[in-house]
Amino acid sequence: MSHVMKVAQSVSWNIFTGLGSRAVGLVGTLLLTRFIAPEEYGQVSTATITVMTASHLTNLQFGQYIIMKGYKEPGIAFHAAVCHVCLGWAAITAAFLGRDLLGPWLGAPGMTRFMGGFVLASALELVSIVPEKSLARDLRFRVIALTRGMGEVLYTVVALSLVTTLGGMALVVGAVCRSAMILTVFFLKSDRVWMRPVPWSWTIIRGMLKYSSPLALANMTDFATSRWDNLLIGKLHGAGVMGAYNLSYNLSQTSTLSVAEHIADVLFPSFARLEPRQRGQALVRAVSAMALVVFPLGFGLGAVAPNLVGAVFTAEWALIAPMLTVLSVYAAIAPPGWTFRAFYKAQGRTTFVMLAGMFRLAVMLAAVATLGRLGPLWACAAVDLAFLSHFVLMWSGLRRTHRALMWPAARGVLQAFAACVPMIAGVLLVQAAERAFFPLPPVWALAIEVPAGILGYAVGAFVFARSTARELLGLVARLIKGRRGQPAGAGAE
Image 1 (cartoon, rainbow, N blue to C red):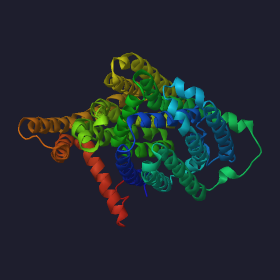
Image 2 (cartoon, rainbow, N blue to C red):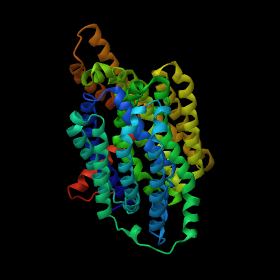
Image 3 (spheres, one colour):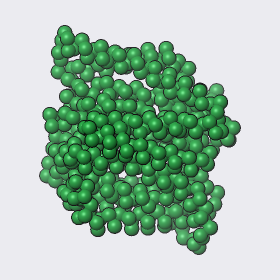
Image 4 (spheres, rainbow, N blue to C red):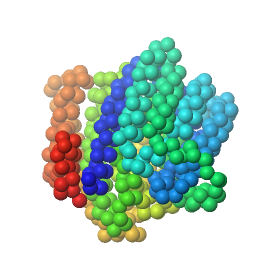
């Protein structure tokens, strides 16, 4: 089987399980909002972010080194496991001990009662990271995708089963069950080489730190960019607005992450295994395909947000609708940026990845702290600004080694955006007709808007991005043939 088809099959497994688990998680989240008020949801979110911040502060990204070098050098997995788990456990323990000070300072004193459970869930998650990276090193994404997907399903089922009696604490119990299940499966499925003690070597530690330190800072800035805005908005506008913003942010992610994050998981190992001369064209194809897949999901959700929120949420969550519309820009532009990041990591340009992440975080915090004071929607616009700036910076990084690819990469993204214009126009025209001639309940309005958007995008894709669309459809066709037992690799590059 060709490398392209092997990667494509890994992506397909990730997407398939991701879509299923995200769908279950989305339905579960919508149902949970019927029983949890924005204020309590904000307190649970603050507790989660606090524990995750402690964990990420000590995550040195040794797992990425396992993917790059672990199959060549003995002892790496053991050293990575010891450092990762010990540092992480120490950090989350410190966060738990300081919970009574952190809660009032973050404007959510009620978060303290949720901290213990989230610390336990994080402790289990920390142990599962190294075996997961060992599986990723061997391109066993089917196991990873199925396990992560079932973990999300388990979380949703447990939380929904207990929410009527435990309230926000049901989310904590669900998180613990999810982490325990994921750890168990990864432990059983991995080669467990990370458990085999070897003499301690500071040479190995220095080698891992040299490669992973920039990635650790980049990972921390990625996390801070996606979470600290919640904390800042909570301080500016209260836990209730923070709860609505957090849910809006997560929903906007769901529209694209169910596909994009699973593609991105495969891109780095794929780029790492390609010859350097092959990576440039692979990047152009990947970023063009990523944009063509995720742009309609992000912008489409923003277009139908008013009727979507009206159909599934109660009145106390009404602020979510305009937030989703504004955040659709972030949801669309973030995944193509991940494609550039995977490319630069495979090139060894981890310092650039780190600096770009720090730039994005600085822009976001500064913009939310200033524009965000004008209101919650301005805070959402500040997030869009940060991710747009980051994407432009990542694209401009091609100037150093692949200047000739700058325009082809930009063209692929612009074509995907142009393909979305008929989609958005179609939805807006339907909404205008609904208001003027035949007002409908939100559910029935969605039943008209969604097909109109799909039709508009299909037309736009084959008018403005025909080459990329045909390539994607051809790849899907080959995958289907492969699953039916036909020679999927025929003709693959």
